[in-house]
Length: 265
Image 1: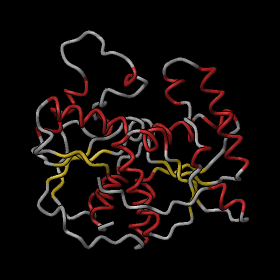
Image 2: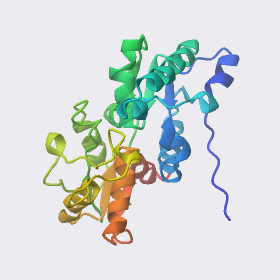
Image 3: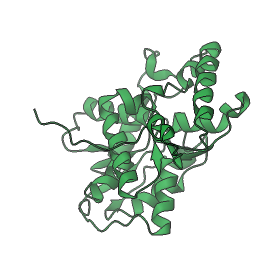
Image 4: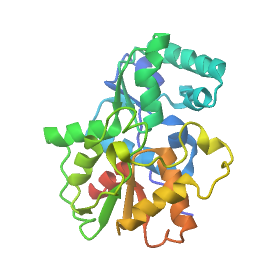
């Protein structure tokens, strides 16, 4: 079995021990750390950060869950325990800027941690990539996707919850390809069906599951790539493609993966 290419990812404790303070903390998240599919997204974004020579680090083994699933599922005590522990670690490293690849992590850091005195500048990776493109630091010359038709699915916690609609689209616009919108998009986009801790429970009674309905929205566009920007959405859209027996002809890639491939990283 071929071994994966090793990526040099700085760890906060190692840098701090040398008296160094990186500009950004890259918050990997539970999916980026443990889900085999989303590990590829975390690797892709780390490659992009290295390519851009960004001053960053990860917490490594010191990173824990943000507590978002616990709070959504109604376990407030567990959420606060996790959040307060994370805040202690983050403040110990004097973290100012947090980069996230998960909208759920982004939302809870930005909107709910301040209630527990966790105050940080939280940046979603699609906004970060857009800024790098706008500054001219991130230039895409590859036309690897020029013959592909791409549709983008808005994650609830990025779109409706935080009004981040344009950044991911601006990033995708810089990838030579055909873009097509689903009928339900931006603030009218349909949930993938996994948020609010729904991923961790059995489906409720009904005629059709939400992820199947949303996959059908994507299939109607005729796209051969569904671009996502959330681990929950990626899981549900991938499951939807399998349910429809379309996983061979239609692919689901995260925006970070599309950029990394376009940069040949």
